[in-house]
Image (tube, rainbow, N blue to C red; front, side, top):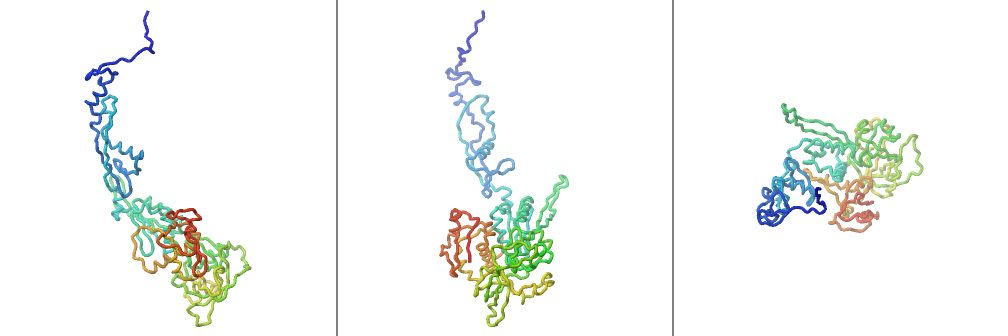
Length: 476
């Protein structure tokens, strides 16, 4: 009979260490752990100091052979990057034996500029440029566009931003980034563009070509507070509104209001280029009038097929006189969309179309009875007081710009006033508190209530250093 040993009673065999004679369990080296550690250094061949390249400009680490990646400190991505820098495989060092040993590897972070940042610093290397232009004397649209670019971070991939007298140039290292900017501009302002490219070099053996691309963007030549004359066909398609209109704002479309009927209309970019029109007067032609009489139009008869009526404005009939002609008795009658703001004795800015040489094809074809003598734009007051009390500010794009003259500064202040008065454009802009300006009273010297930025931030539960998308709401 064969005797079988119970497996539960089996004990593993033991051997003696060939160095010190201690009883140990069998292992591939037949040596105890103490003797193995004293004779074998498993860290041999593993570098104790490794260098890691880091770009300070873009905060990225170099991953061989040619990739730059972003890794946070003490993250898994950074740990994986550091382990890959160890060249000697651990399997060759251990020689088949299972042994643990603790040792320290020092990683030295060496600053090195990546290729993308190097081209940015050079400021001469670019593969695509977006040229944004607007044929107008006022820069209100560009100031608004600048804030949208900052809000959505569309300037982050630019190599350089250059300001010229009638627009901005955005330089990019890739055509894809330029195309992304073009798509963004088409969604934010009414515009059109043309694309072109120039061959820089080519390799006939590998059939590769190197181009520089140019995107020419043209924004509609209309700004806020411009007086325009629509073509008869366009005016009819917008609900039979009058041809003479006032632009109240420019966002993704041109927003117009008829000062005779308060009818409003929005014109997108494609409609404008199909039926183009120009501004009849530029901002320097604004004249100051004094209100002699003002009455509100109660019952307004609307035409058949008329469009929407503005609920934020009040139609008024006023008699005005130029402040420069106070020694005469010449007065002008007109209708205005500012009926809710004007009282006898108030000062108001407007365009004198009766004594202005207007060179426009649509105006020349109109009946003289349909052309108003005066078009009022906005109320006039001492704006220096409001400017001193403005306790908020905006960010600006870092760009190469020409010296700002007094006219550019005046236009920028006009844009800030538009933000205070128009909630529709203010909600699209990030506004920041200016701690250098003290908070003053909540009432202007003219008696108009004033809502400070602090009150607006409290309503929105936003901290002092945070961004307020709704901004300050200040009324004059």
